[in-house]
Image (cartoon, rainbow, N blue to C red; front, top):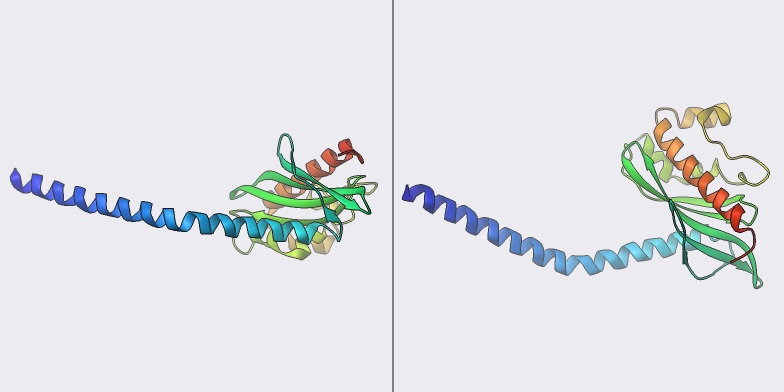
Length: 183
């Protein structure tokens, strides 16, 4: 009996030391990770700003986390939206910029857990180019059948990812249309 008690105490001590080390490592690395994540977010905002001046962030609604006006000589030229959506691997975050009529200027995938080689293609710039220029007068592609044959073949095997990205970008476009040029 004492042998089991001794083994249990040793295992408890090992677990306690490991837990304390994990907590210490988390305490040291969490601020660095937060700084890196914010830096990546700011870089993405610059990348999708389309050369416009970035305004102040305000809260969005629904799947729109936030909205940021874009200014051209003091006038609202468009908006940046962060949109949450779901893909095959779970939650995805997309940042996209739009003109005031809802036309997609730029888009970028921020976070996802999609399948390497298939859904991870959404991280590449050519993937988001399929949406650029659409959403205002020209409707956004919402399914693979809305794409030209070569683009449809490029997203083949990742239909759920494409559906998540396209629905997010469409939701952002509709939200921006509802705002028009007002901040």
